[in-house]
Image (cartoon, rainbow, N blue to C red; front, side, top):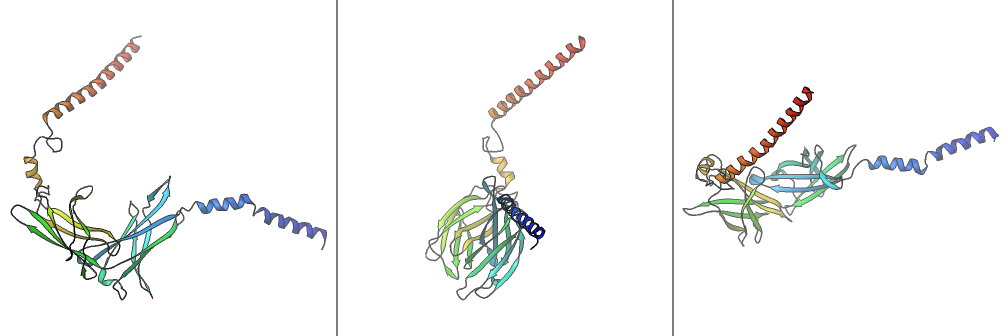
Length: 289
């Protein structure tokens, strides 16, 4: 082979090898690392009327802690041994949770009546894809209000896969502006029933209505199971405001608190007034000179 060709071939080999140096490989790794790894967690909430909410949480480790990722598209599936059926898509909210609502009677089940679900985030330029799956049996909570002269209670019945479920803890909550208020709990008996007393003095809306729900939390076979009801078991807000005493916890603060507030605000704004006066005096003296 001529010497000139040998030299050209040698330069070509050098260029190829230089392109694969540790520095270039490291740069490629850094580009790949820019796509953050995500974690996915799929859960379910079975509600009244055979309604089921599938919830997919997508998180990534940002600034040392795992944070929910908003605006990501998640695909939900119902799976069996032989097929996978698309149920629909949903985008994650500000907390990183994508929710899809389905009807349990429309979900394919195996011979044991088990429902299997999967959800997947395919990934994008910023985040790597992730997925998760769960298996649950159909379940429901039945609610019966018991309203007597001097007491109120909720009779709850937990049914899982068609049979009563015993020895499970059920909690009662009342919907509030920022977070649900827990007002009672109990454990189901052999008939799947539990009778839980309800407080008599909770504030409601203008007509005394309360949004109440009972919940079985994160069961291994049924997931979370809820039942909701609106009942006129609260004290109307207008009446409540009239009846409340002057106290720290009421909308009617005590007189000493009002006086203390007035004194403190007077002191604060008084200091501001003195400062403004001093500045005006300094400016006046400067202009006089």
